[in-house]
Amino acid sequence: MKHITLTGTITSIILVLLSIGLIADQQVIIDCDRARDAYDFILKSDTIYHFCEPCGDPAPKKDVVQAISFSGRGGSCSIKVNGKDVDLAYVFVKSEGAWKNLAHLMGLQAMGVSPVLDESRIPVDQDAKKAKEESDLPYLSLLEKEFVDECNLARTNPGEYAKILGEMRKYYNGRYMEVPGRHRLRTNEGVPALDEAVRFLEAASPLPPLEPSKGMSAAAREHVSDTGPRGALGHSGSDGSSPMVRLNRHGRWQNTAGENISYGKGVAREILVQLIVDDGVPGRGHRRNIFNPAFRRIGVAYGPHKQYGHMCVQTFAGAYQEK
Image 1 (cartoon, rainbow, N blue to C red):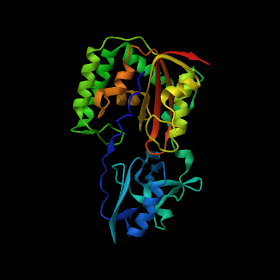
Image 2: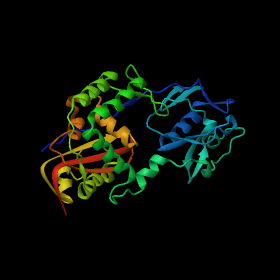
Image 3: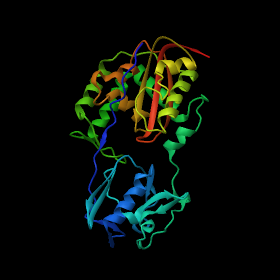
Image 4: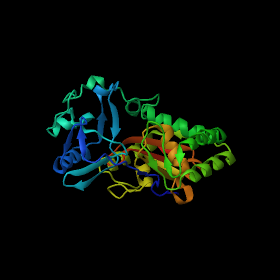
C-alpha cells in the first residue's frame, strides 16, 4: 500500500512591478487608499478579464488570479497580479453578477471604456468546457478522460513522451518557465528536473495502459469536492479520511493503492507533465505512481480549488472491485 506525499509542484509566480502609482486610462494617478480598494476587489476575485477595446483588443482575455500583492504608501502604491502590468481602466471584475470595469468601480474617469463588460464578447473557454462536458465514459468529463488517455500514452510509449517533454526545454530560462500564453513560473530546480524526467522516459520500458474506474473516480471526486472549496492541501479529508478509506467507500481496492494530487493546471497534458517532472519533490513520488507497473486501475477527478484555481486528483490501484 502506497500513499505518496502531497505534490510539490505548486510553483511560485514571479510578479512584475507596475509603474509608479496606479494609472487608469494612462491619465489619472490614484492614491493608495483607492489602490487598496482596487486590491481588495481583485483579491476577492477568482478570475479577472483584461480588455482594452480602445487599443484594438479583439476580445477579453481571462486571467485566473493566483497571486496578488500590494505595496507602497502615500501617493506611490502598486499592485502585483500574476506578473503582469495591470491598467485599472482595462480590468473587469465580477461584482453584483456582472463584469464591471475596475476603474469605474474606483470612481475614476476611464475614457472610451464601458463600465460593464458585454459578456457576449467573452470567448468560450475550451478548457473549462472540457471540464464540464461528459466524455464517452459518463462518470468522466472530457478533460478527465483526456488525462487518462495522456497518462496511458506516457505509460505505453515513454520514448515518445520523452520527445514531448524535450520540446518544453526551450521555455526554460534558468529557474523560470515562460510558456507563451501562460503565467511566468519560478520552478524549484529549473531545467535539470525536466532533463532528468526526459532521461527517465527514454530508459523506461512500456507498461500496460491503466483502466479507468467509476468507483475510484468517485473517490477522487469526493476529495476534490471536500478540499477544493476550502483551499485545503494534502491527502487527508476534512473527516480525517485517507485515500484508501475513500476508495473503499465506493468499492474495494486490492493489492496496492495510491493517490496523486496536482494543483494549478487546467489542461490534461500540463497536469501530467507537472506530475512526471515532479519538480521539487524528493523521490519523484508522483512519477513513480504514474509508472508503477503494479497499478492497473485509475480514477480521475478535476475541479476548482480556492487557492490555486484548479486541482486534479488521481487514484491508483492494482485491482478494484466496483460496488
